[in-house]
Length: 502
Image (spheres, rainbow, N blue to C red):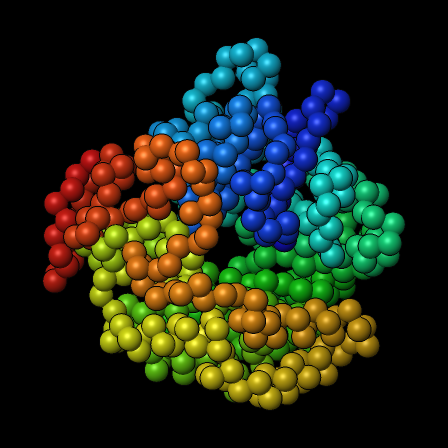
């Protein structure tokens, strides 16, 4: 379960004065807005860009019940003025503004927008007991030791939202781990076999600090293993990988993204283009030391035909040095990223593109490298029937080879390797199609868009329940977005002109 923004917000609220609870829809399931009767003084909402419509739906429910609704997350950070249409208070940036929001709530002086740079980390302790009190029990301990990333990948929201990298005080990380271990339920897996996952955007950004955290992990006898998110170039540093292994690292999630170098260059993924090492050998070396390598894989239907994308998956399945991706995604033009503005200004985004379409499964661009029907069929197979592209027995054999190659007799390591390698197949069984067309602006909406009281006004239906559009029927920016559009750059040859200047 990630992210842990809610846990950090709760930790910034005075628990001696307030009864604080967490509700995480990925953990608890969708909040039942029609039958639940709880009443709250203040509700904090956060989510990723495809979740923004859901945040609006919840805002209607809680505001109707008399609560002050405070919202944060990606859309609130990048488009705070727009977000004030739906919430009482908008937090642009990091969670740290929650403390100021609560102070102003007590004084009755709340402002519509609070800004706190994500890379500015204030002094507070994370209270993991809130998880247990809220019925949330992940199998591992979720910890953050830094925020942000100094790389400028064009498809990523972090350069726009954070802009840089910042670390927590090392003692604050130590206290967070102590609290996480001490408050774990007595009979839980994370109590008797403590594993730490560092949810940092880029654990490896500050090498000196990272090594101090690694030493903390190595020296702490309570911790049985740990995992972190790193950039691909870290895998090429053999001495560092050995140091990780000696410090009880069990898994590294690396930003491999793609083996298509043209795609990596197009998205400014410079850290993946070093010629010093071969990434296949780097992965094999790390896994030979007992460090499982996980990664996500991106497909770009603008540049890749359906058959070319399918062949990439078949290549990964055939290659003995590579694990299967932990997750798969079609490139989504996340609002506010450099890639988003470029595609918008060039007129390359799909008509009637919605925030809800930015889910990594929908075709969000107007121009594709193949017939749309072929691409849609590939996407549906990829997410719902991956065994059509790659046979189950091949993946099972690949998983057994990875377990044998890791050189460990630890069944927990075996489970971690197997779970990562089989995740896409397991995911396909739990991910409903919901009548998807996989085309932006045309996908079926979630049931929650229609869960509203019978006496709701037409104005509130439009305000809280109609999906937020990024483009209109001609692929031009939606009305609300025009105020944020940067000045148009000279258009590329053959691109459709947009004609919009902020």
